[in-house]
Amino acid sequence: MCPNCRAFITINDRVCPYCEASVGPRAVDLRPNAFAASFLPSANLTSIIVLAVNLSFFLGQLALSSRVEDPGIAYRLAIFGGGQWWRLVTAGFLHGGWIHLLMNSWSLFILVREVEQFYGTNRLIVAYVVSTISGFLLACFLSPHPVLGASCAAFGLMGIMLAMGIGQRADPLTQAVRQHYGQWIVIGIVMSLQGGISLSGHVGGLVGGFLVGLIAGRPGHPGSPRETFWKVVSYLAIALVLFCWYLDFANISYLLKHSSGSM
Image (cartoon, rainbow, N blue to C red; front, side):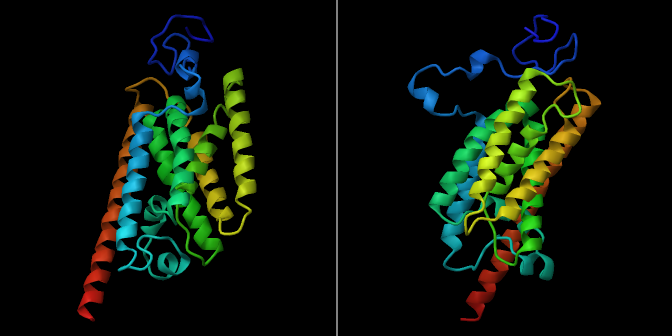
């Protein structure tokens, strides 16, 4: 039932076809079905894919670490001095160790599902890629130290949730979401003040995700020109990620060939 006009709608509607009000996930979908499940976030296909991709690239990173120095990691000299701009993307799929991977995976496990429920898959993909780029861009601009990890994207997903409903009529759902993720962001920023964590990268990712949410807004009617536009943008974002990894693999192959040829 639409919370605005009380009309009956389908469980897949994210916009009421009668009054065009935004509709969030049903309460029954968010309710844990067992006591033990209340301590664990629910997964969906997209969150599993994101975690599998990050795990795969981390394992590849481990396999190459003894032969190639910093494959795909972002740092100022390589990006601004060497023209290896693709590291702004590839660094978001690499991690500094198992603990780093597990911490980011836990955050993404929760965030990807919730962002997709409210914003849809297309905006999720765009926010993930844009916040990864904006986070590493700011981090490399402000610091010469190498940075890596999916936390820029995690802060970007918090940013897009913080942007929910801004510029629209306030309702209890969007107010509750902004308050909830505002608390997440405060805790995340405080934790980022510790040594060895890129505060600038997290802030850059947060700003990138927030801007995507501000510009894109909540999903409209499926098949509309606006939704078609964001679908195309999400495909372009995926293509950009694949192209960046192609460039990185080509660079790694060159380094491996050069190192073996000099031995």
